[in-house]
Figure: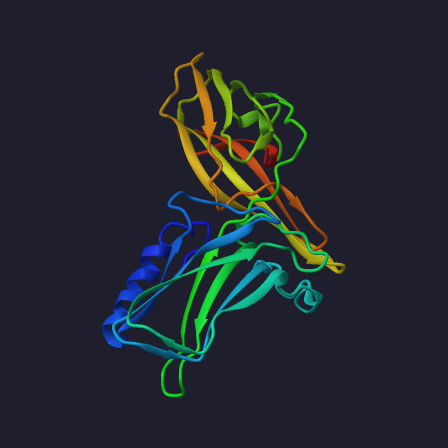
Length: 323
């Protein structure tokens, strides 16, 4: 079963392989197809549509087929914070954003062969909740799923299939204003340095075209190595998620790497402009989010690796939006 949106890469083949194995044993299966061939995403207030496909060699007796939709925010603390915030476990349970179900087929018999049943679900938040954008993090996970269940007679095993669909928040109405940021990196500008006098001399200039970025557009800019006493080994861009979870007792803030891309290798020519270009990965980024119980923020680090593997890092907080 598929909704009107495509699950993350790898999921489809894994589910369908497992389904094919089950067919050989039980002669029946669930499958699913999106309403359209192209990738889709759903916004709050729109409808999730698709087709439920049931295939069986023989007529299939059942006690009813139901379809349920659920949206959850799952929070957890990192291992270093476990025990520090004991109240966290009692006060912050999975946050349910969406919960609805419908009966697709009443109890009876499904004929042999392939049966296709179209479905459509309105996507509406539960009560006064707000729908957040699909996001797969380490300590914060926002996921929307469709689950189809076929109840079987007493001695037959019930059948079930689940798939994820993508939810995007509504684009902001105001136009994104460019806010370019210039930077200069020298031994004097570095922080958290114990022996500044032992550092080699270097001068790096550059700019980011914006730190308020559309999540669908790449982060761009330019870097220029003007001088360095020592050889450069590599220049990299590191995208970092900063997830904060907690309650009234306190908050745990954890930064983890999403991706690291190399923009230059070897001892870069002095005075040569190096382009900065990074695409935000779809599932692992979302518009910057701040709520009562959790926050999801993003940063980018420009990392210069010296020949002796010492690192020079410049950090830039990012604000991601959907436009």
